[in-house]
Figure 1: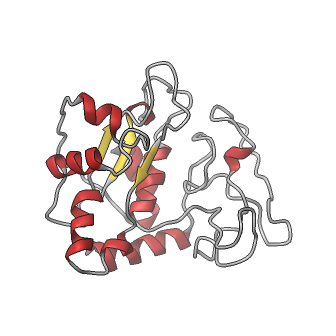
Figure 2: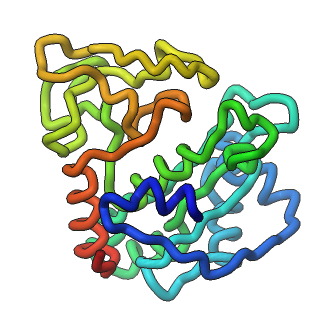
Length: 229
């Protein structure tokens, strides 16, 4: 919680831990988040219906599962973490969207992604910050509405993040600590935001949100999750 709150502190966004529910369910652990094992998200919906907090879109549920990782390696289709829905998707109203919120809201992380875990040199806690950024309405800094690699369009809809054509991890390994920024859109102001939590960069590099990102999160948390910061 200390690491999490320090990442959001400059935006006056604070999280409080309300409890931990430890459940042993081998099927959920091995199937949830693995597309070929849970293609229609049956097991994910089952897990979240059983464990999730359904009463409020302002309560953040964080689930820890396998997501394709073992104690020694990751499968080709493994994930570090993900959200199923952005807040503005289910907040449009209607019973079907409310059902999607109940069954799909929250953040799901692989168990190896937390600090002091199996791959502690690669996973420092920034991936959870990244996924919570999505939960609060942020897109990737390398988002493009055109073809992949395009430097055109509104990007992530935040003015103070430089336009970025590709994720930083395409050039760097997860264990890289040099954190040298690329410039994938040289005709636009600024270099790629390698230090931004919403890039795909080594965790050691990701240390900040911009003021514009904090504003977008506060606005979306207020509008769609009824959270005032």
